[in-house]
Image (cartoon, rainbow, N blue to C red; front, side):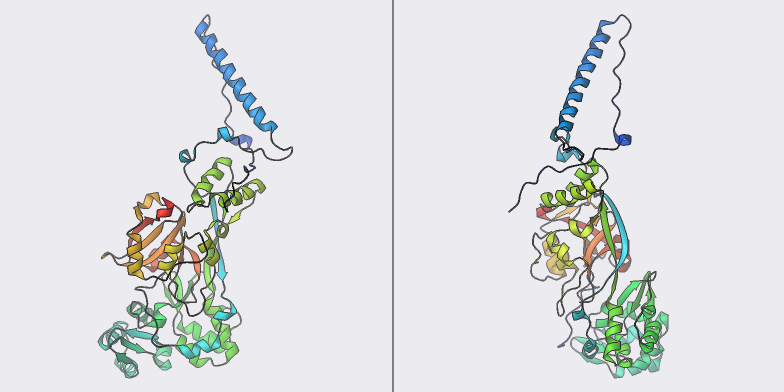
Length: 434
């Protein structure tokens, strides 16, 4: 996922044919009964021939089914007869039954460094001094507060950056914090507002997480604000200034950088659903592997973790955080999603993403398939975000370029609330998926 717009860099700071899968016979309730042949009309010879012909057809069908059953290993589900399977083109694709659950993705120890407090820049910012002042006044900050912030602002040809005094951050009301965030988050100079820490309001609040020191808990409670269905915190400089103990800093970074996300599993309950699910998840030429994994779960009556059905590139990153000092974002993720290897191509920006999409096929939103890319665009046509369609209302994405945002599963409705400035959705299909 990209920020709005994409933030700038901080200032100098061998394929095998699988054996035919074993499948389970349909339950009796799902098998259509064979209709009885029509009765002959009294005294009518044509009716008799109809009856005879019907009996011949039924005998042939019965012999065929008996032969198919005789080849199955005793006590195991019979394999689907090849002749009975409809052509692939006649089967409408369907992902199967998808079940989601909320999870926490937690970063590794390399993402939890107390010294990150010593490298903070650009808590607030704007393209120039006048814009910075205007954003603060629009948020309802008083004249003395505005002047105290402008006094410590560093402005040059690249814009203005400022670390507000702790007293200013401490005195902000919840509405003022939200207004500051909304007023400056589009500016690349406001580094901490570009990528605030966030989690759904329905999950444990930052301040209520275990392991925090009293001071950290106090600041997280005072500095958090709500935007829609998200609880956010961006006053990291204030928190770092007040909490100096390394162990206590490590504790609050673990809380802030844990990501509340969705995980999912897929189930297939009938033979027909199995075939359709194989078609759905095989985008990118992975039918053998997808069929083997889905069939294994179907035969055993189990579920398939969504991760197991993703292409290698996405599977390797799902639920993980990028390495430190890297800038992977939604655009790079979307373009590389169907890559047959774990490695991706060179990093790209929004303009390069748009150029790449010009070589892909635009598809209607009501014809979306697994692996299609959704571009979130403003009314003027600027692309602010990109995500990869998975199924139903789920997409796969990377929220911004920061290291503390994971590759994750998100609902489209959530994305639209976050990127409300980009109401237009345009879908594209990769050449390899046509």
